[in-house]
Image (tube, rainbow, N blue to C red; front, side, top):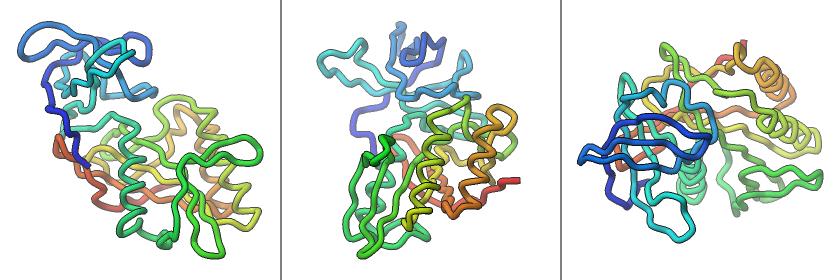
Length: 232
């Protein structure tokens, strides 16, 4: 996946609410940029960090800029939470994802009978597999951590996946780590113990877990390697 708009360098100054960040451009001047990430962006929103923006002049937007990348201690990080879904969709339409059968058809944004919604439903020919994709940007000492804030919505997704398994379907929770300095993924139990317990419970009930790390080389990002996970 490649961002088609030219990348504009700057330095992060501050975040206002969830969706706006003030950035000082390298060429001079301060601008507001849309933040395509509702998470806390732990370690990714420190004053002075290098960032890369795109300029997207669509009507109705509060700002023409969008924040895409931030420079971490060991390389670039993609903070755009829509990017993992696009990468997964491209993989499902192409060679597929490791451990997941090649689908005959892929349906995105699936509404469940009980009212929830998941990212993908895969027609496997006689079976259906459901996928939920999560973006991971928080890494501490080589450990990718999710979530970076308390997430009742994330817990509901896990419960929905486990319910679907009980109904005879297949289910995957897919974590996409949007940086290259992680060696393993763990649930951030210190921040959201309920999510950590729900993830372990979902895995026990047959929900598959897949962790994929990106190769991040702005303006390109690609799914690159499988990471292990630790639910202990």
